[in-house]
Image 1 (cartoon, rainbow, N blue to C red):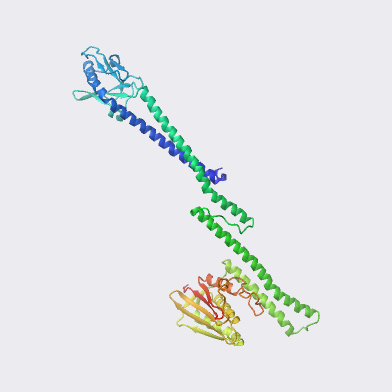
Image 2: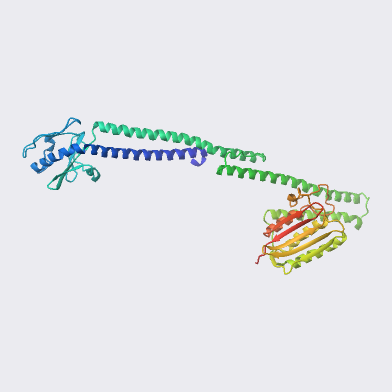
Length: 461
């Protein structure tokens, strides 16, 4: 049942129970402490008067040999009437009088044998009460105790004191609960704001943010919530952009395919290898796009399969560079490899690393003009193995650098895909490198080329 109640009610209920228990315990302890100290004070105040009565009681016990008949010879007068003793003749029932609110006499074992208020007759008093009493001794042997208890006026005073303590505790409890209600409302208000914001974001208002009302743990929750909402909004925007980009990337080859096929059907083009070549190129482009999308989706979902083994980094660089030298020669671009020996073995997926280096080389050759050069470097240090692909191409503008690893991002929106590439190569590079526990970064200046650096950890299986 409590699980379905609002948090504010739960906090208020918990606070109220805590206040009731705490104030009740304090009031009870204060009540008992006040009563005990009042008794001690009263006993101390009455001690001088009782000291006068002790010799008379001792004389009575010595004459009678017991406490029998004490209630017939002891008369208690109201407070302030003075104490008076009569003769105390041995063997005769001498009358004794004392001014006490409540006079109590016990035997040697603490059993009450006389009580002017007739409240404790026959009861045995505890050791602490007897400590406040005055002993009655005969020849050094204790035969009884005498003490004064509170009378009606003292009891009324004690009751008023206890009532005041209880009322003070009740008032303190009410004030504490009231302040607790206010505090609970203040504490839960930011949480209610987060709840309302979650509902609005769930309804599709991804631009909504929670106002940060404090700089405490709840404020941190609001800040984290806003960051989460911003990430959701960013991901949604990327999803929409990716959908639009995929549609755009598919539209161009599909339009070429449709045009070529319709021309062949209408007899505009003859069915020949030359006229089928554009169709084959566009089919291959669609295949690369689908493969890249699949690889990227698997990598982002953490499901990209890696068949790791010890890979000779130098041999891998030479193989990939050799595969791209013919393309470099077609563009009149010089492709150079600079390997720092000895290079370590890296525990990685050889085909995936070839895909990474191939994408970087393809990207570098695409943006390097004729007469330029592309350099592939590899070296190792304490941090691990490093690959770097440096070109002398057009470079990347500073505003575009943070986005080069995003899907379908193009620094020049007017550039077409006619020269190859799906727009996913660098995004795939980033995902594959991170799947190996490495990092990739880019440094570039406009018209001064770009350098892509891949750092991989050196691990053994």
